[in-house]
Length: 86
Image (cartoon, rainbow, N blue to C red; front, side, top):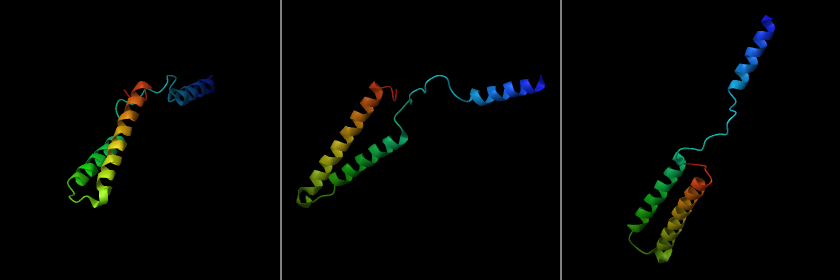
């Protein structure tokens, strides 16, 4: 009787850590994404105030950063629609 009780308790302890319910979505955008967004915004600001045109490459780089920021906004919207984040 004691061995059966110990086995039942051991099984309950082992399986109590496994969630029966599906994982809930993250509450917010991951910190790494926010950090990347901030880095892109900082880079764009630095380029904006860098002065010379650099043969048009500075402006092109700023456009690429704007596109990357738009992709992050689109990704966040997708994650919200698909319940990856709230």
